[in-house]
Amino acid sequence: MADQPKEFYDKKPGFVVKSGTVDAAGKVTDYAVFTDNGQGMQWTTDGEHKMQCRKTSYELCGIDGKDGEPGKVIRAKKGDIVIEALDGDIIIRGKNIRLVGLDGAGEVTVTCGKQFNVNAPIQSFKGGVSNTVMSNSCSIAAQSVESTGNIQNAANSGVEQAQSSILSQILGVVTKFTQFFS
Image (cartoon, rainbow, N blue to C red; front, side, top):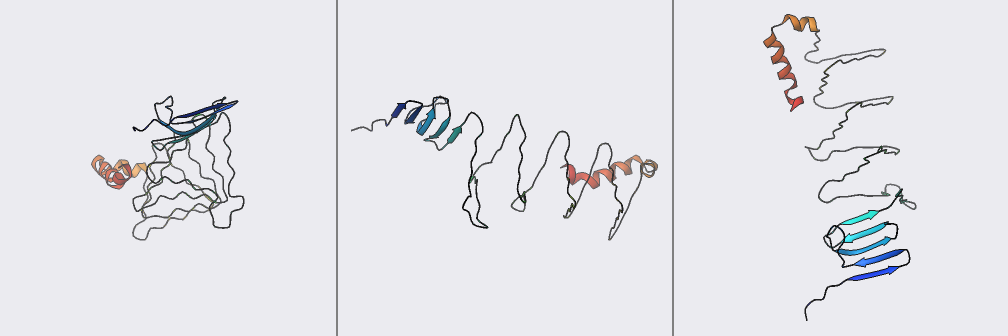
């Protein structure tokens, strides 16, 4: 006997439960439950899971957790994790917040179109190379400013640069910031 399609559809007052049916996107439902207001969740046979709610989605976890034990883990074995707030802010709060780029080639990139602020009593930067390139101006101000270079500590102004040849100026900029722009 040929395999019969396995479909289940049960409409109750206020909600519906489905399995084996095809949704509006053409995907076969593995299991789904939706309210008459269009809220619910769905798993499809191709492995997707979707949830939909009309206002705030609130989850509380880790109530009885132990020290050092995560209260919530979101892990993607393959692919990206995307968090979007298309008409709002994304606010991350915690006792400590750490952004970690794994692997020797890992990176953390912050891109914004208006302003990037760091506001902390102590700001520490540690690495092999630090480049700061501004198209307009760069200001450094403090009660005390210390500048140290073990091999060289050089500073010049636009006047000194203007006195050098244009070729020297171009070569200096290209040499110094080639890696920064690539």
